[in-house]
Length: 412
Image 1 (cartoon, rainbow, N blue to C red):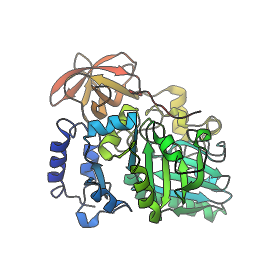
Image 2 (cartoon, rainbow, N blue to C red):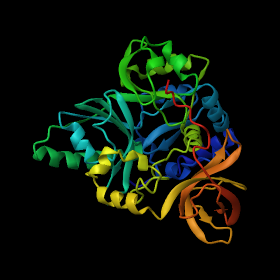
Image 3 (cartoon, helix red, strand yellow):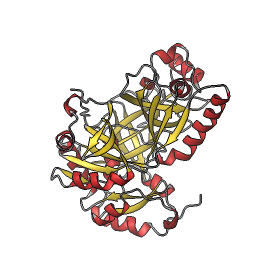
């Protein structure tokens, strides 16, 4: 689809003025926003679109959807609020789907690197879809609801290619007699409640004991009388929950949550700052179809049992990489000067180009420039001094372990 930026650039500039320099410049997914622009008439809207507008959300196109980039708070303040209290994000642009049937697990394991069969019922984990060359088609959180019911959430920008990819292989599997069916949950929305106050706030709205509901767990229970699918997970590095809610219940739950003084609405801008501080990847920036999970530092997504046979797409490539190593690796950086952006060159102090930045921003919590990107070995070791080239100027940087900000996932 051909995209136009003419109608949204003025809005972005107004948002920039509202949050203050260099807040908008620092957003790591700025280029993805630009890639996601479409004419207003073609933009999809979540069930909370009117809610966002009524609450002062600054709406921008993102991956074909009209989504809030921020509200009244600056991106800096909103990021810090999530770390100290709780923030509510509308993430209904993402695609939830289920695979059901007695062969659902076996089918899915042919497409992803994770040990889905080995998950306990009601638990989930990050995994990746791979292609024949071992490259990452998309990253996804996969939950094993039961032995014959798998729930996934895939990225909004990857929805069409993911559904086409799964559908193609599903047709072939069914032709061979496999029992598996795909259902896309367009009748449901998705909210993310994130931050240290998330549990006490949500606990007031449900009878389910959240103190025994740990990171990665999934359950179906009522919130304010609305039947929800709840996963203890998120994209901020903080404790929190993702709530899959029937579309007609989204407003009721959103209004109830923001009525709590500990909860503030948050948008795409703070969400990107939070995930970068937590060292989490953004597909289209830090992950691409030519990058393997080994190069991306996601070798842990290849389950131990899966390493016995490597019987998924690209498995032989990944097997070889695990045995021989890879020439490049995703690492973090802390840098001086202006924040580095996607595609900024990474060089040695002498000027040799050794890699490229994939995400970069000024960290609201650390008050430092942070970035991640891919470098050649042996420059991937923590403490290695390098340069990040920003607008022609080579700024000092050091390879740094991630996450930049300590994660606080609830494990009991």
